[in-house]
Length: 81
Image 1 (cartoon, rainbow, N blue to C red):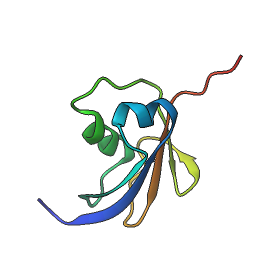
Image 2 (cartoon, rainbow, N blue to C red):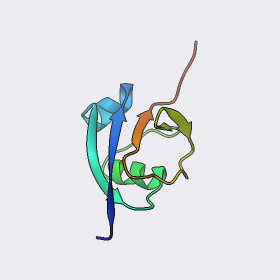
Image 3 (tube, one colour):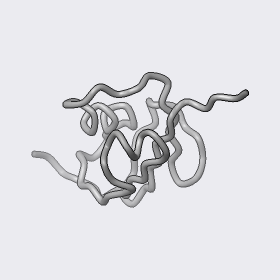
């Protein structure tokens, strides 16, 4: 394994139920994208499409490159009615 950084991950609503926890600290490879993190977290489970991701309380796209100490949050698709 190469160099790693520490990040904090929060899960909301159905994503929390899918992952089985509210949050966690994780060490990931430096230069990992939000997409790579999501794939790592969900590689053994069926995950929803169109998941939303925020880093440090701002929505980002899945190509965002994570930085040491980032707080990442995953949200299910928003539905209205």
